[in-house]
Amino acid sequence: MSFSTETKNELARVISENNCCNAAELSALVRMAGSIQIAGYRKLNLKIITELNSIARKIFKLLKYNFDINTTISVNKNQMLKRNNSYVLMVTSEMGAEKLLKRLNILEPDDGFFTTNEVPEILFEDEDCKRAFIRGAFLGGGSISDPEKNYHMEFVTNNEDFADSLRDLINSLGFNSKIVPRKNNYVVYLKESEQISDLLSVIGGHNALLSLQNTKIVKEMRNNVNRIVNCETANLSKTVNAAVRQVENIKLIQETIGISNLPANLQEIAKIRVEYEDMSLKELGEMLNPPIGKSGVNHRLRKIEEIANNLRKD
Image 1 (cartoon, rainbow, N blue to C red):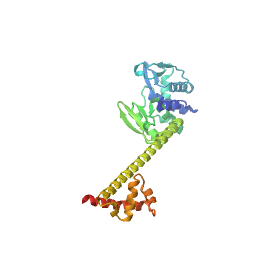
Image 2: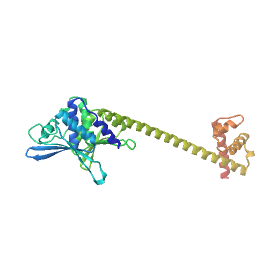
Image 3: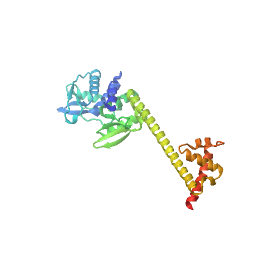
Image 4: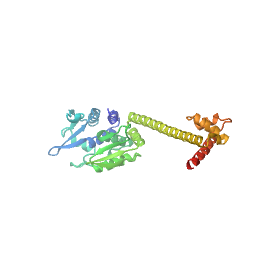
């Protein structure tokens, strides 16, 4: 099961005790997942399609307990490309489809069949109603990427005015959502993990929020470990290359003028360096008598390198 499906299943279990919030949520669900059909002269049917059984059950409950509409859920089996089944709820004209659409502010309240294209703020009695509407929009036409791969949450609608209005509603709660066109649709999206986490909290997806944060922590730890390993690998490679170069310098001096012609302090460090090629500068310094620090060892080895370079020039 995908992370997006798990999130939707969790949100589908969130049922508000306030009728106004349920109306706002159903309004968004119908706008995102519903279609209006002409069923005859001045007759309309409402058809709602979703791919998740949990969402279909939620719509069924909202219709029954908040609008006294008893409908049925039918299943369309998709045989092609092994796609999921789809669940269809039909509210007919006889059930009161037109009255429902007007109460949800999807149809204009006047005696007509013109739809409204903006978020119906008249439904929002408080901030909870706004959160419910965003939750319904996500259940009806939203998705969220697996946080293991990337951070992306989106709402897909085919109406530009509604997309603008939905973006403004989300941003009114302190977010920074944006819109991008995609084929014949308009996508309201969030990219930053913090923004997605906060929006999940706002709409009631607390388990999804915890899962996203846990995944983010693991990814950050993994990246930090990789950075440390890469840094240590680079330092080790640098140390090994330096040791190889130092030994080559000493061998060049030995083959040309001889180690015995070096000053006593350079002879001492040269002999230890050749004998203990894998030791660090600090460890080499501790073996000297008297011991010296890392910078002292490095100074002597640079002197040896200068001598070797002069011999190469000659």
